[in-house]
Length: 421
Ligand SMILES: Cc1cc2nc3c(=O)[nH]c(=O)nc-3n(C[C@H](O)[C@H](O)[C@H](O)COP(=O)(O)OP(=O)(O)OC[C@H]3O[C@@H](n4cnc5c(N)ncnc54)[C@H](O)[C@@H]3O)c2cc1C
Image (cartoon, rainbow, N blue to C red):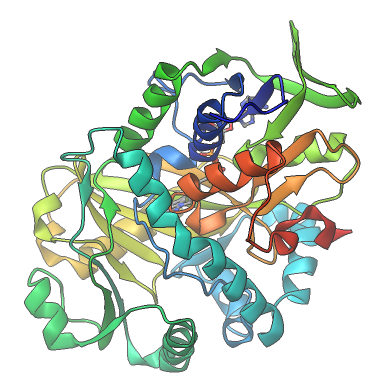
């Protein structure tokens, strides 16, 4: 094992990014301590990494900064019946993100995002496979593919997505409605077509997999401390301080991996990064997971049905409303309505486990990886929006490499926070 000079690293955030970064640093022989305000072994640990849809989606490189959907956004925001919703009390606070989003909503930025998402997405599954060699994932993973379905009313957008994926060499199999019904006979045939990503994996319990990775990190010597971190600073070239209400912790280097909550720290470090959140929800229909064999994502309605060990998970939608607003019952009702419409056998079923999660989102839909601009011993790793589950393991590799000052063949410049200066 190579001996890196870095004597110690503190990581803020024990979500999938923090834990995968910690694991890779420990493997390099660097002592690591991860902080989180919630303990991953306790019942109240429910961040985005806990409740997501579980898709490993390296194909989903085209994001929402696209001119083709821009004109639909105002209509979607005013409807409580759509995939996108806005908490009106949050509009002012959302302005910096929205302004930047509009700046990035053009063909050139769209293709730039797709290219640099693809650069990391295509490495994402191998990075997980390496971790999976060390943990038992039986009953936690399925490899039966993932299906997108759609109605032809938005066919131009679907054609654009298919073309971008084709141009990047991403494998996809176009399916007719009948072919989809053959694969998933319990669906209501209210769609016109779709695409299958054959052999794509999905987690039948994202938290179950997360927890095994966390345990592996501890087993290899990583430390965890339950603390609500209030501040972070670099004092000199050998020292950063992570501070909770009661205590200060010193490390040579620190990593910010606090997901959607990372902005508090970048603001303290005097960097104006327009990080915000796209809120998403899930509910379960208990004992109904066998109604479908693989995740089905309804693109027009912005939600997915994912078979999980906890039940059939209806998950998704985007709500722009910040970190403090309470969960919205309207969004939960929307999810349930969409689920029952897509799978009529759910009609009489009750749901349980209402959950709200915070996707950490930047307006150009690329994550931030790299040193803070003014504090080189503090490294950023946040902003994975809809793909943070997919990108956990590769983020661990990339960011641990940045911390350890290793050379890389990847072009990391597009992920720097420099782009928001
Ligand atoms: C509804 C929904 C569905 C999704 N589906 C998918 C999917 O199918 N596939 C996919 O790839 N991605 C999906 N995602 C996205 C993915 O879940 C996230 O991008 C990813 O989990 C983010 O990981 P993270 O480690 O950055 O953040 P988080 O998981 O949010 O972890 C951040 C951690 O930091 C801690 N923290 C924050 N502030 C502090 C502080 N001050 N002190 C101490 N600790 C702190 C929090 O407690 C939290 O544990 C989905 C997200 C949602 C919401």
